[in-house]
Image (cartoon, rainbow, N blue to C red):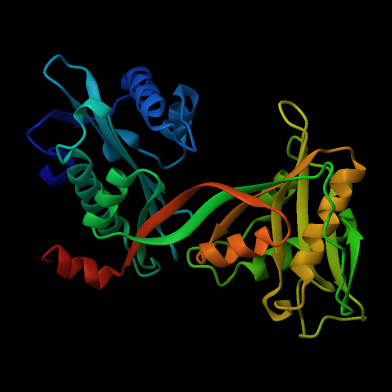
Length: 349
C-alpha cells in the first residue's frame, strides 16, 4: 500500500483514523444523536451500518474515516461506498455525518473534499480500458441547509430529487379512469413478467447512471413482502405487435407494480411504474396510476402512495398533484461525473 492510501488526515480539529468494525456501535450512537437533532427522512441504525460494512466490495476500512475529539469519542465520520458492479458506469456514493455540537466548524466541508478525493483515487486505481466515467455523489435532505452548502462547496450539483407522495382514498372522489385508445389496461399476469421487465429497462434506459434491472432483482421485487400481483397492472397495445421492430417487451408498453402495507397504515404503495419512451404523452402512466387507486379501494386500503425519483421535481409534483397526491419532504442527489482524463488533469498527473 502506498503512503497515499494510508492518509486519513481531514483537518486538525479532530483525530482521524480509518473506520473499524469495532467502531460501528459507537457510530450508530452518533447517527442516533444526529437523527434526534435533524429528524431526517431516512434513518440508519447499527444493522444498516453492519450491512454496509459487509457489502461485497465495500472495503470500509479503506474507504471510511472517523474523527474523534480529545476524549476519544467519535463525533464525525465520512464513508465512501464504491460500486464497480457495472464497469461502464462506476459510482461512489458517500455519507457525511458530524455531531450537532461540532458543526459550523467546516468539518462537513473538509470531509466531503476528503471523500471525493478518495473516490477519485480509487477510480484511478481500478481504471482500465473498459471503465467508464466516474460518478460521485451523496443523498441529502433538502432541509439540511448546512450539508447542502458542503455539497455545493465541494463542487457537486443537484441532479435528482426524491420524495414520497400520498393521497387519501376514503371519502374522496377518485379521478376518472380514461384509457388511451392505443392500449388496454389489464391486471398483472405472470406470463408477461419478462416483457414487463424489458419494458422497465427500456423506460429507464435514458436516465443517467441507470443500469439494467436483472431478472433476479425484478422477481425479487415482485415477490417482496406486501407485493400483490392482483394490485398491479399492465398496459398492452391493441394490435398484434408493438410499433417498433424486435421490441423485447412485446406488446407490454407500460406497467405499475404495487404492494400493500397493512401494519401501521393501510396503504397501497406503487413500487415501480414506467412507460416505454415512444409511448410518452398518451396518458398511459396516468391510466396505470388511476387503475391502481381503484384497485386499492377494492382491496379495502385507505390511502395510496408513491416514491418519486425525478430530474424535474416541480413537473413531477404537479403531475401527481393532479391526481390528488401531496408531497412530503424531499431528498436531493448531489453529484458530479468526471472522465479519466479530467481526473488526471485535476490531480496533476
